[in-house]
Image (tube, rainbow over all chains, first blue to last red; front, side, top):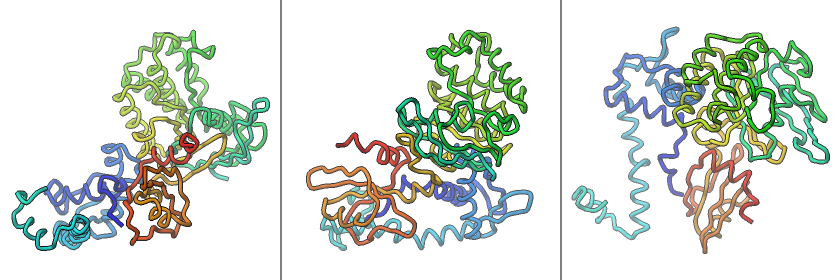
Length: 124
Length: 292
């Protein structure tokens, strides 16, 4: 079975990944406050319950933590956590579908490796 | 019994049954979306829920109180009807500000400051008569009444009909802001499904007078997928699952599958799987006879 297309991810997953991306790009720094559920709901025009679901996933993973009565903050070391999490997911997210497509087209492993080494010149 | 609820609602006009055995509960603190085709019974359902129209059978209650001719229950409810210049309503000859004035007297929790703010936000000319307003401006009036009513249960019938995209965006923002500030319950019917889908915590679909679905929007979209591939492979992958809207092209087939709790697709099947939008789910569930 092929992977789900990325543009069709659930909204709360997209909210979660958007915050992760902001942390990776230093738009939100560690120990800084992230936008509240209500702010996210307004920025993206989504139900606050959906925004909260995305935030809660990040809390469960330890990337955000709650300061009572103040809001959600980025954990110290969160950036590294996101990098290592995404490195682990890299095979499933990118390589697996790449190899599947290559197999369907009859491209050998050697050819795939050659393409990667050639970079973008090897074809799209 | 908390919430606005109806049990076994039947509504007949002559021989025609418009609502058929409808059970529905609206909980406190949620935004609901109501979608259905033209003539599915949306407006009738909203008017029965708010005691503007008597049901032929069944009961409606609000936080345990019957709503019919009951001021104590009705003060918690607002149904801001669609204004329509063609239906000969007495509102037509009124100026918009007179209509808002009447609403301010009718709704006991009326927020005049909010009404004034929304008039300015939408740039509505309140000196105009209702019948002289454009379709979009009429929608603005109904939105202002709904928001400023401050009713615990606020039902809006196609509030974005005729609004331009900027005004629609303003409406969604006003709705979210009001929801966040008060936790009021909103039920919104709309045909512009996709742009409102992410606002609805739950979606209710009505078809031919029956509620065919009421579910958390995110859960629904996670459980619905389109699978496509060679027809026999698709049939095998979808065997035993709830399927809708099959389409064949040559040897290929596409079908929407709605997975129930605990069901999953066979991961080894050679089929393409993609997510669906709320609009696609709606078409699959309510538009099936179009594909005969």
